[in-house]
Image (cartoon, rainbow, N blue to C red; front, side, top):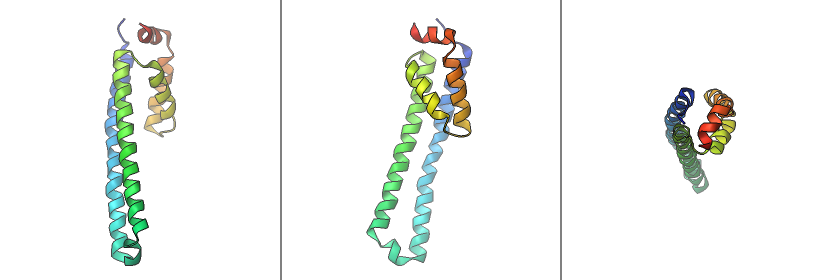
Length: 125
């Protein structure tokens, strides 16, 4: 059974949303800028090993969350195109409700469209 056009469009929206998530890497540059400003204005804090480690941990967290965000959205886009992993797509739609404003819109359409009987039949076949 062929996937409805709206689900293929939804898959494309997930790919785009995942690509936009790459902007999260800009947070690393922002942290570097903050660290630079601190080094210029407060030499004692800038040489504190805890401060340096905290900045490094925050960078690592930003990298991890950005890669996870992109990977999940690309996986969901692929799953929607191929009619697989219905539950993952549905759960991702629910979680996107908290990603205001674009994720909320994408999540609402995901939840509504994945509950339609025609779409459920495409995933089950």
